[in-house]
Length: 231
Image (tube, rainbow, N blue to C red; front, top):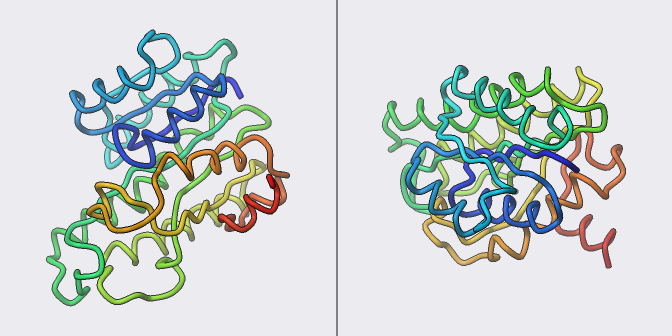
């Protein structure tokens, strides 16, 4: 892999995925809404300043995303993008304690705009720049498929995001799939008990580079598939 794009790369899963890809030789273009936080994360991931390109971008804004992927297509040693991890997401409330009937309309709208439309925009704008062997990945979890009390609009958004990526997989030639992480301890989940992001980040490298394309395309791959393939 030469070049990867990771949205929501300033913290949590996105930051760990970016660090893992850099460690394995990729040039990573990361974005986040908070430019200062992003710059701090990049300084930690890549002190040399050579392997990571940071861009302030909001996935709710298609023009931001357009500029992001155009920059990424020129960032590596070869033209184009080899992997996209559409990771940016928001959660308004406390995991396990956010009942859907209590979610404000504004929070519901912004959750879907970020977590669903943001995935759609990221994939759509990336397509003209994808290399022939590129892959697109979206992180998700069981709550997208099994309703769980207290996850409100976030659970709804993850189900919709999975549907978006499956539709792209059905209508394009690139392998596009869902990476099911299980519970991960991040800021977005209010540091709920779960796996460390650094422990599961290598699963994205496996899905992006090592797994058979058919294993990923239009599918959900998780810890079981990853461990079975890499043990």
